[in-house]
Length: 119
Picture 1 (tube, rainbow, N blue to C red):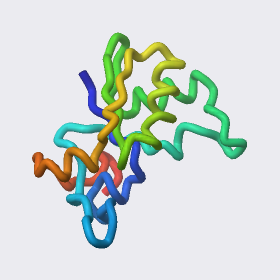
Picture 2 (picture 1 turned 90 degrees about the vertical axis):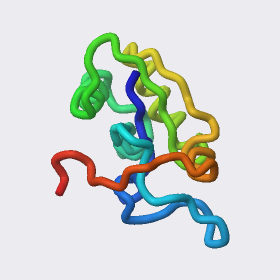
Picture 3 (picture 1 turned 60 degrees about the horizontal axis):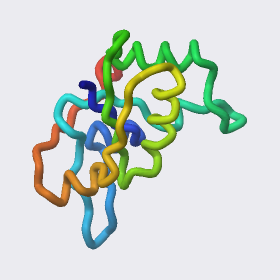
C-alpha cells in the first residue's frame, strides 16, 4: 500500500503549514508518503493528462504495477483529482477523507523532508 500526498510540495516538505491561522496543521507529511501534487495531474486545459503521462508520474513517485494507494491532501478535495487519475490508469485507490487535517489534529507522526531528488 502506497500513501500519496496530493498537496503542493511546499506543504509536503514542511516549508508551509496548512490549516487556518488559529488552528494550523503540523508541517510536513504522513511518514513514508510520496508526493504527487494535484496540480501536476491536469494539463493547461484542466483535463486529466494522457494515461501515459499519468503512469509516468506515478512511476516517478515509486509506483509499480499492482500497487494500491491511499491518497490525501488538506481536507480531501484536491486528493480526489489524484485518486481519479490513479483509478484511470488502473491503480486500486482509496481516499483518506479527513486527510492531513484529521491526521494533524490527532497529533499523529509527521515527517518534514523534501521530495526525493528535489533538494
